[in-house]
Length: 528
RNA sequence: AGGGUUGUCGCCAAGCGGUAAGGCACAGGGUUUUGAUCCCUGCAUUCCAAGGUUCGAAUCCUUGCAGCCCUGCCA
Image (cartoon, rainbow, N blue to C red):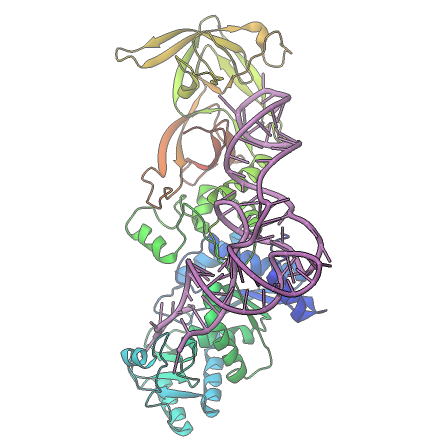
């Protein structure tokens, strides 16, 4: 995790905390209005690893200040995903909505200082008064209400005597400020809505810009990490800490570039659209880079963490190629995954000079110490249809008429005869084998280049396999064939202990809840 | 009267005045009973551009240019 624990953010942390690095407190503050994806994972990992690295603390906090979009379902989904990723927040689980009382006190504080006022302007008028990028805004006609009147009005807002949208509480800053965020921002709005945590106790809800710095301050967050789009909001963040906050803590906001990945979709809006238009099966669709999708596809938390660390943290906004994610998936899976033979497009081969059957021993992995297994060899087997060519090009190392190839872990065979149906389609191959080429016998009289995976017709197990491709094409359009179901023939049943296996020349697969096998990532040798 | 912010290889990304790390991708070669893995090798005389300061600049200064974010009672 060296990129995560050594970057421009850690420079700030070291500068700010000096000797007291273990006083670092970070937080992951999602709004419970959607499901987490790999971009959120970057934030969770950054905050979580930083706290771990410096011996500090990591807070899980729901930024639930807008009940109209939020629900307990999302809360539970998020908690589940964060734990799955491996960040156990223990008892450090917080809700911004539990701070509503403190937010209210801080608002009173602001009003008493003459730095906030109750405004009667409609949403539309607020917009008009705000001005534009190049022109200053103008003051609200309600801006000069007395402190007493503001106090009275704000209390009435809280008591619920006004309707939604009728009044707001606004900070009194500067309507001519070049940063539009600073032009008397609304800090409380009226919304008579049920809240998933505070029920109907409140009908005024604080806005993000106001609530967030206070949430951080209340929790003694030292470094509040967020994405680049909040750079404009930082002066406001600091303004509220300086003027509204009634405590001592001084959290610091630092922004970093969020993650985007090629050939995939991460935006909440786009994700929702895919789901609502039924382009995907749901938020756990294995093609999605949601944490649920990644998990159902078979990715492990370790893969995601390694990938996120490799991408690094910076302020430049770019798009990481999905190939980097795939690289780490292969790199990690190869160390712990057994490889089996599986045929996706079977072509029958009859070994004419072979009778009976025998037990062969195959290594479970050529890349890790994972033991060996027994495989039964018989006269009639299946090979991959693409492993045979009647008229092979020069660099084709596999089976062709008169060419000798090795059956993985078994014997060398030569193709003697091709059998076709009336339409000319190849339906079967007749081959002969050479007994002295048996695997492990030390045979080296001839160099045999090609090695084919195979399954015995008699012992093969049929299993549904989901071949998963990129969600998007190169040009950004939806890939219509991003998932293809196939019946694969596998050399043996896949047991519960091997929930992830490698199929030679195809890729790494994961046994999902439907007992089907999802392609996690294809091998570089795979050919589609 | 606009403001903020970023520009280092096809993609990420180190670098913080002493002469361009690393990973992915790609291309060669070797090993191999998975065309995988593994192992070598190559891949920015140049850092958005142009000037300037300096013995020395991706790093400092000046001026441009380009991208991204900001005018929700969203976060």
